[in-house]
Length: 391
Image (cartoon, rainbow, N blue to C red; front, side):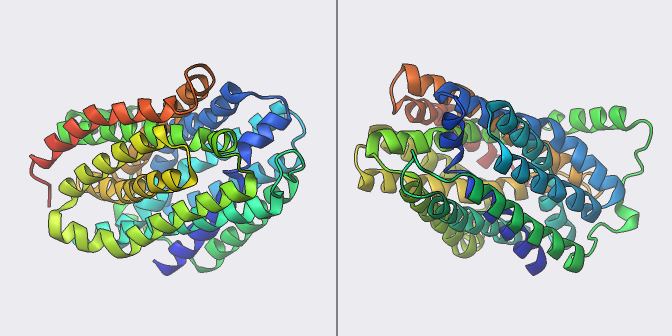
């Protein structure tokens, strides 16, 4: 678990380097707010499309080889971004990265392979903390490397630094990470893979609780991804901050997420149960988005980000742990890949509307729309709370 934590942290550190800079990167090569968010949505769309297949491959061939090849793909995407001097190269780089990012479900499947049902939410929280810590330090390092001024920012150095960090993650994976999926638990899907996958999807979504959890994930990630895709531009326009300061805000967000995942998820899960905790995260997300929609000062933005980061950091491990309880060992890669893919669908839809809303309806409108989406999300979460959780 420690090795997986380290690999995930280093990988996300490289990813986080790019997050606060990408909108300004695209602006420099000629893209406006609508193009910026569509490029971000493309990344998530490709992740959505590839996650089930990558998960299925890990069920068949093991987690380790799939993680090796997808991590190599992440390195390629960062290198391409470093050399990008036109919009189409930026799009190509993000496309390669999106395809490789379909491995998130495999990472979570690895955790389910090595953890028991009782400790699974806690281990999911540890893994989520690796994501949060990488997201905490990556943006501030990227912001410092780029500089404080948008007009003179250096985007090549952060991209190549991200590639270097991901190389470190790949080397750690090759040297220290053993295979987690035992041969007797591997899927025997061969020539009828598409049919088998279709059957598994129908089986998964025939379970109404799994379907509700998936819809909650879509709605919540629509709202969260809309925030992330437009936050750098919103902060620059409303608070008049540059890449370095935006990176510091992302660092604060990652810090809040890591604290929640390392210290709160285990005790809160034991106290309230995963389903009740799921409902709490939806309430916190809605409140944070509502505050952010009206924010005009840094203090108000930080209050909103505290609520939002708390919600997002707890939602992923709690919901993933719930979903894993509906999967047999031979299905975990597929079903968790599907669930991560469903989340990626939300990450496609969120940026897709955020850019247009930001440009046409006002700077706070993407956040207000996201807050309204939390109303049906809360109703679904209440329905999940009322249902028994599988052992």
